[in-house]
Length: 274
Image (cartoon, rainbow, N blue to C red; front, side, top):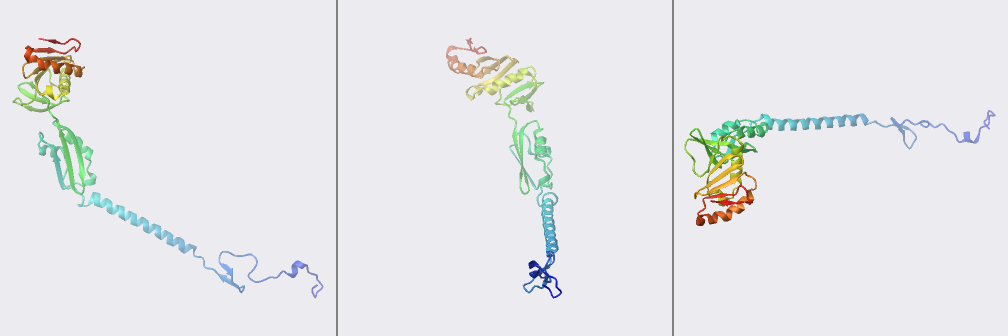
C-alpha cells in the first residue's frame, strides 16, 4: 500500500518506467549496456549511390569497348582490303575476274558482302562456281571453278565449246582439238536433242569416251556415236546406259576381227551389228 493509501497490484510492483525503453525505434537508435540511447548511423543511401556508380562505370566501359571494336572493323584503316588473290582461273583472264568481282582496295573487310561478290563472278559465262573468302586481316581470296567443255558444236562458221550443262564456254574460229564434235540442229542450252547428246557423253566411261570422235543427236531418242576407228554406235535414247555399255564392251573388242562397222544397242534386248 502506498503512503497515500492506494493499493498496488503485484504486477505494478515490478513495473518500472526506465528511460529509453518501451516502443523501440529501429531506424536510428539503440541502447548500450548502461541503458543510454545511442544513435546508429544509416549507411543505406551511400551504398545505393556506390552501386549506381558501379553500374554506370560498367556501362560506359562496355560502350567504349564496343565503340572501339566497331571503329576498328568499319571505320579504321587497320582491317581493310589490301590484297585480292584469284585462283583456279585458266580460260578466264584474271583481270576479267577482278573486274566482275568489283572488290575495292581500301574497302573495310567487315563490310565486304562475299555473297554479292560470288554472284558477280559467277555471272561470267566461263565460270561455273565461285568461293569468296576473307583472309584476315587484309586479304580477299576468290577461288574460281571454270566450266569444262566436253563437246564442240559448229554454228555459222564458228565452233562453240559446250560444257555438260549445255553452256557455251568459249567460241573460236578454229576447231579445238581433243573434243568430240556434236552434230545437232540447234546447239543451244534449251534444245532437247543437245541435252540428250550431252547426257550420253557424260555417262561414257574413259575406255569408251576417249575413242569417240563425234556425236550425232537428231532427236532426244536418236543419239549416235562415231568412234575414231570408224565404227558407228547407234545409242538411241540416253536411258539404260549401263546395259548398253556392258554389251558394247565385248562387241567393240571383236568388231575389228569381224569387220563390224555399225553396232546398234538402242534396244539392249535386240543388239544388231553390220
